[in-house]
Length: 130
Image (cartoon, rainbow, N blue to C red; front, side, top):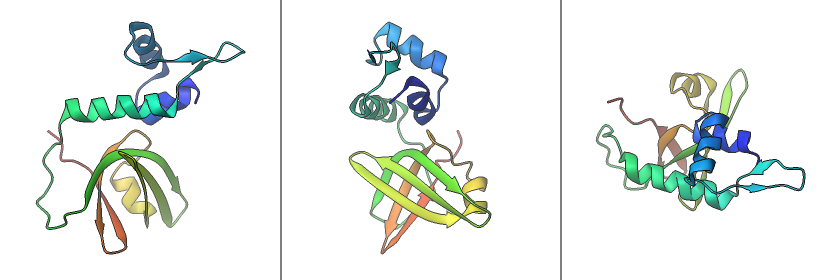
């Protein structure tokens, strides 16, 4: 994917991603036209490193056992509903919620979230602010 898309998924600026590439923090390759490209595998590797480094912030206690920390990769909202896609390790989870809920949670590509799977519903939580 192009550097701008990768930066958006990571929640950083394209300048930051270019600096990371120059320092070797993330590997990029050049297209035939000279554009910088980041592989999905490389993007996932960096997301995993960032998750391990940042450690999970405490969230309200829950009884649900199926919790998947991940990163929002897509948010599509209309006037009523929102589709939120999350990459949680090797898993891609999709949650349907109200557009209002997605707005209140400030969900956007690159946001760190925890998906809670209970029965057939996927609930998206945002870690508490420090």
